[in-house]
Amino acid sequence: MATPLIGILGAYGAVGAVAARRLAAEGRFRLRLGGRDPEPARRLAAELGPPARSQEVDARDGQSLAAFAAGCRVVLNCAGPAYVLLDRVRRAAFAAGADYVDVMDAGADPAPAGPRTAVLSAGLVPGLSGLLPGLLADGVDRPLRFSGGYAGLGALTHTGAVDYLLSLDRGFGVPMALWRGGVVPRALRTDDDVRVPGLPRPVTAVPFLTAEVAERARALGLEEARWYNAFDGGFLHDALNRLHLDDGRDLDARAAELVRAGALDAAGRTPYHALWGSLDGVGRDGTAVRRTALVRGADGSELTAEVGAFAVVEVSDRRVPTGVHRAAEVLSPRRVLDRLRAVPGIVVTEQRGDAAPGADLAYETEEEGAL
Image (cartoon, rainbow, N blue to C red; front, side, top):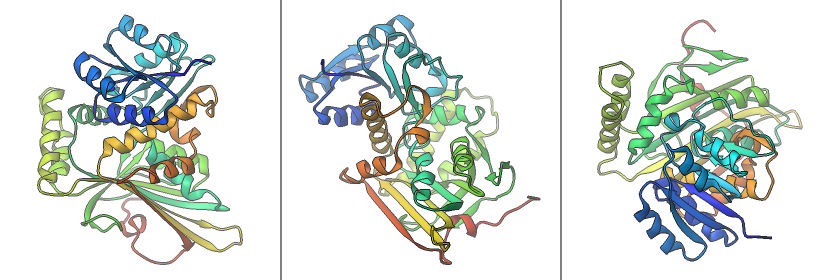
């Protein structure tokens, strides 16, 4: 049987390069490294050796995408902005007979899969964020309440900033909402001084119930779920508050402001990206239990790439059924965390035990409004 060929679009970017190195280290794939600029793709191919070849590709051009996807077992999309590309790369992969993995998900109507498989949202947020509730609920007889969040301190890419701004109007989540049998808007407020074990300083925690977490809450039968975006520093948070308003500037100018604000928050500090979660429920013996988990690394792009590369391996090994899926629906949370635990520089901690009073983001935050 021929060695499977994996096409990586955006291969020399912050996410794609890490994913390419991880898949090359598997020792059982050929890699096609693609992007609009052929020179960095060639350099990366030379670094990775004979299994890797570079190919120029423009994700905005259908013929170019078709040529790139031809012959691939799986196409991994690390290019963006996702809310500009929508599902055009997925459609090209399917047309070429390839399966598909995307580290993002623009929320577009899914392309018909036929006999093919796609795993979307196979990154950090969304992706790993949606896997946390399932990880913590595993083995709990009756999971009840989940609370989690994301905090990042470090360089923000221009593409990432564009995607974030576009997501605000595309149904990615609901500010200040929680899940309680359905989405309850305006139920929570921002907390300016939240201490999360494993983070170096108090953070500003802004409730933002993502569609991913709401879907997981529904699937797991949770009574309540909350999600927070947390900010370590005031510049990025202030910039986002300003940019919610239409000030007449184009998208690139607003994204550039976010990039500058993120750099100001990170100046002179050690970068990190962290996801955490806690779940309360009832154990098999009828006792109350609480489980917590924290995943932390220095580079959000690395965490995203590791989840994306893991999804490629799972799809290539046919552990994912045909059809279009979100990562949190079909990837094993335990297998993903075990993989992350093996990566130098990534810390994964878990605690399991009886429920006990203590600092918990979900229950420190005062609710507002009629519930």
